[in-house]
Image (tube, rainbow, N blue to C red; front, side, top):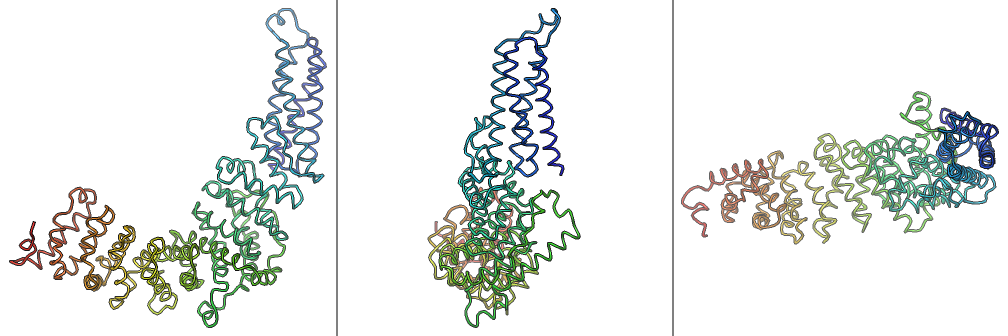
Length: 610
């Protein structure tokens, strides 16, 4: 109401100014011809302003605000000029100089205002008459044509018929693609609320896809994502995600992933609105067969209907108990999403079963990416995923998936295991020894590490195993062996990641560090570690750290003496030690331990040949 009142006030002020100019024209005693020409333009402006007053409450307001503000500036300047044409005494006429040039400038400005007002009327007429999107250029946008295109397209999405709304959304998506300035203009000009409304157009999947695509292009910036969140967009997006055709869900899942990636507030809000549950459900669709379904519980695609009902109840409760759910809620929040949510559940299920395999695959890719971004750096979201039995689903897709789907699932597991590494409660709950899900995940991570020759996939798998280092018992040597083997990997990144992961097994923070250190040596891990010390800085650093851990926890090993580890530690580059102060202390302790066990006539120093 405050917004509408402000628009009405601006229009009323512009009409008042125009009437004052008209009165001044009637009172003019000089430049009467020029003043009459001014009066004709002002009459046209008044007519258009009054038409806007009658229609402003149901019309897209942003161009009205901008254009009316410009019209007021031009009318104020014209009023000042025309008032100088009244009869004055000889003294004032000497000091008031008016020329025909002044009137030509004023008339040019008024003609521009007339053009702007006609353009506004043309948009209103096009929406009422269904004559299509207006592509003409108003004078106010002569220096920035994109502005007129954005205004016209957004107004079509507000007021046009459904085919025109889809066309306008697709045009704006084309404008926004890879152009951040256009994206910012679209958001600043009030595009988000009608896009969310179009996304909820359950009768038209094409409209939903157009809206989701457009919102996706806008969501590569933290502030723009914040605008979508402020417009209660997260709740709308989750509702559409839970019950829509697969083609729509694919784009909505992509939107969830991008928003969660760019803005932590959106990441939290999606979890709060229960986005994880439908994502896991969609990801598990047709993933398990036969007895495997019992491992993931009774949750199936049918549960999506229940999700919608739960969210409807939650929305009703929020509206009753908290009228200020958001610090800023636009008029869009009053829009009702009551059509087709649970009604269409069975229809969408049949559509899913009959969809092309390519469509199902794309949906899984998008859902896996969304889960990855929701889990990133979030213990709570990682726990929510494990609570939905998502780990089993991810493990199965790592086993049977390929390409982008397999990668996204691995990255999701990496984020979950990273959260578990630093959160004992999550680690104990999700990765306990007798957990089928934990065993399935570890089995697939080891398979990727041992069997696949792809650094892109091996790196997240190795990191995940490293994050779980504290969950493995001393007898679980099947994990250490593959990591040791990759210390010799031709990929420097894989070799460094293997050293980092093994370091988490051998670190003093790991209760079983002694047993793990001995296992690393038994798997012949010392020679490749010595070679890492001749690699790049990252390999040197992490290889040196692991070597120190081995010296601390298995310093009496003959393998360390045979490899002349003491000489290597004493010959560490002083620049590296200066760069990493903690490393200097660690190296000193390692040297002390080796000397403690291997001092005497057969020490490494005596064996050393320069």
